[in-house]
Length: 88
Image (cartoon, rainbow, N blue to C red; front, side, top):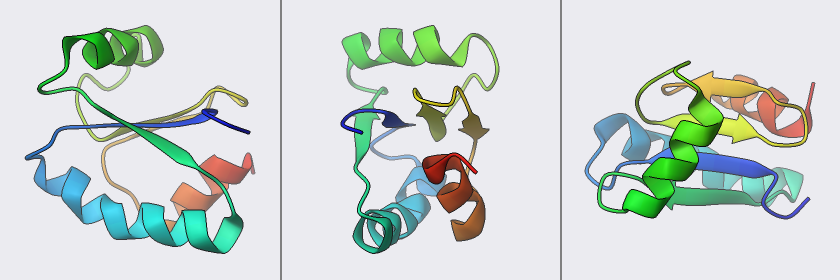
């Protein structure tokens, strides 16, 4: 599922940095790839964020699963992140 799982983040965003170990654990344990798109310093990625966010969250971190249409606003726990990624 290449590029089905999107993570929008800001380079200096504290909650985004806190999510990094959970994303790495998810990728390692479940064999998925989460594509990170930095939006605070990249206007193109910010436009992509707006396309998927549609006013739902308005900030980062924002996670979007293109396969299921599910999203997560803000930071979350590992089990919720796993459920989002695996479509459960």
